[in-house]
Length: 107
Image (cartoon, rainbow, N blue to C red; front, side, top):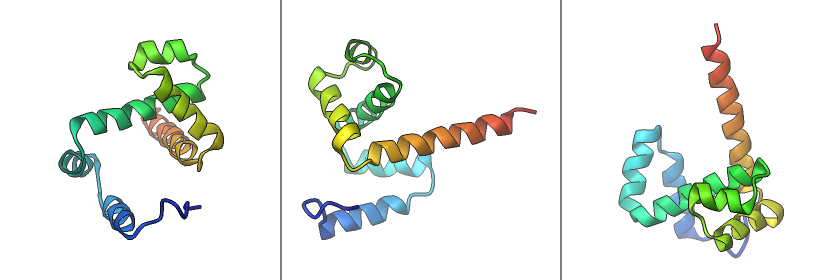
């Protein structure tokens, strides 16, 4: 479900553009142009924090491994508990993809 506070024609166009990307190389090219390096690293860090929170890692362990601040970890945790389930959706899909790739590697 899309939040009415977030819904915006410019974001609609951005998300439409993202959905047209076909592979990792295209993602790197597009996001390198549209985001700063710091923004991209922050997004990647948040994904790693979400993954570690899902694995019940402690805040201390997450901070040590990712360099994320307690505020960032707390924000990601709040999104996992009270958010729009975007993290959960993508984390589940990544797990499924890993299972598929792993099963294809097993003879």
